[in-house]
Length: 122
Image (cartoon, rainbow, N blue to C red; front, side):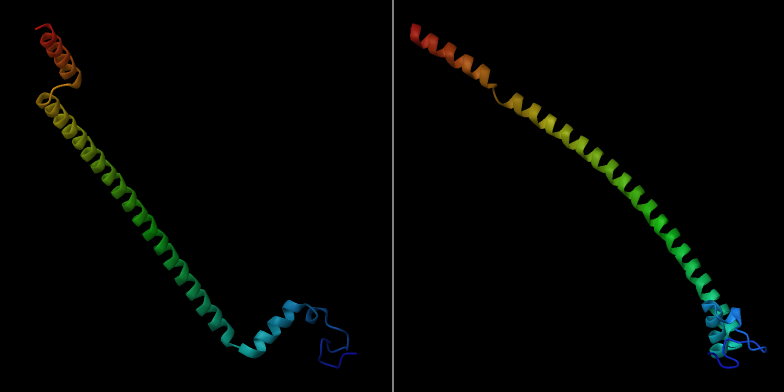
């Protein structure tokens, strides 16, 4: 059985609005915080807005850094391709020079066979 003032109205009937848990929570908040609840809510809203603004700024910064990284990677890739092409060209030139400086193995083999045949005929 409930006592007067506890979940009842002035006629002694159970107040249906006081049996709702959210209403009880609101009543407790009003008792604890009173008039300050609006100031707290306002401060929480300000903090929430500040956090959201900083989150957006961080997301923008992340996107800017991502864009710079992609650009730098593209530049590095282009530089590497140019350097690889230059190295390939230099290697080909050096190989060509080596071919000119040394006798081809087939040619040397054929010359030795010819020399051996000439020596054998004499």
